[in-house]
Length: 133
Image (tube, rainbow, N blue to C red; front, side, top):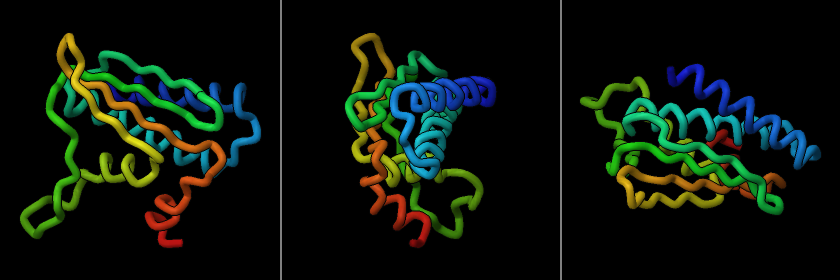
């Protein structure tokens, strides 16, 4: 289920960017779609499922709202020999590519994650550090 919802979410965000911010670079779009995939997949795997997904463009920023059914805060586990090398990168990827991340509790239960990404590519110091540039 997360695969199909993640694919739909990526398609929706790509369409939104192409319609409302057509001059956005391919690298910025790729980063945005990676963040969408990680947020949606984490909500399904660790958050009890998607409660809401709302992407919007506000000025030169893509704002992603993802709500799930868990009040547990996302974590980026420390890598240790005992910790498996598979998975666990999603939240770190989101935090490193985003210009801002806000996690809040929903009154009806669960949490809302709001992530903003620059469509101009100026948030690139984090992305460049991640890619080793």
